[in-house]
Length: 343
Image 1 (cartoon, one colour):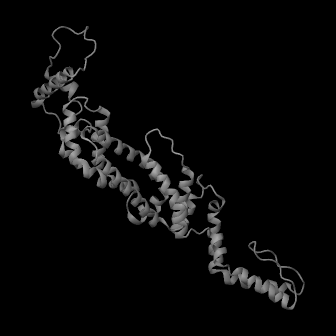
Image 2 (cartoon, one colour):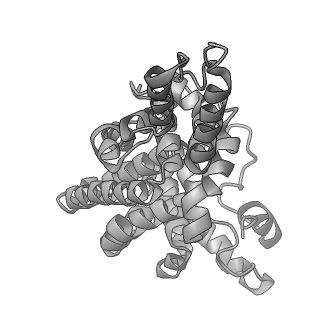
């Protein structure tokens, strides 16, 4: 029942790129017809042959395989035997008609194509051209799902990505501290970018196996893999470096800091408790709401930040139109409105 629903689902997809695949529905119909009703169909052909033998007429063609039977004695018996033999389709002909994909076919033909495509997607850099046929990969996945290879394909996909993430983790462990943050950012961004292609390519497996039988979602499973095999192993080395970089303006670019902090929050929100002040700069509603009794403290923090920026060469732009005496003077209300609005 699951297979028939998938065939109806994918019948109008533009990805069906070969004749056998486009005729999958017809192959399925033929399989059921030649399965339980094969005996009845053979009896009917034999009765028609006997009725027409006296007139010397030929049997009409049936299913593109059955030819006529000449009237009379042994010849007619031979024709009837040929009809019965044609109805009893052997294994190789059945495989051709039904476009069966055996487990050997899957391992030798279909999975190698998927394996190669996944490799390229996991290692691509932003803006790279990937010379793979998304149509072909989508079609491979669809055929394997229809042939009941979803469980094996899911297992192979998880194993493939797990091995990749373990290599990524080892490379990060060998990184010097001054490159650690940047390399973690590259690994995180590269993996999340790859998921944007991998998850849609395996949409049929996700819909008809992972969601229905495992009650999970493919994207959630793949994000969990990165959390377990990379982020959890490096969070206690990464967080002190992030806090140190935060205390030194522009030690790393703001975009890199934002990407990592938002990525860590996506992987595991409870990591906020390790550095609430750091996460609050990029994730809204992390800290409690601002209160009036702390306005002076907020103003002092902002003044300190501006002095640090000026000491590190950050210019405030053209100040010629500013009135005298307004360099670093603030009042509570203006400070709260302008600098604490994100709380």
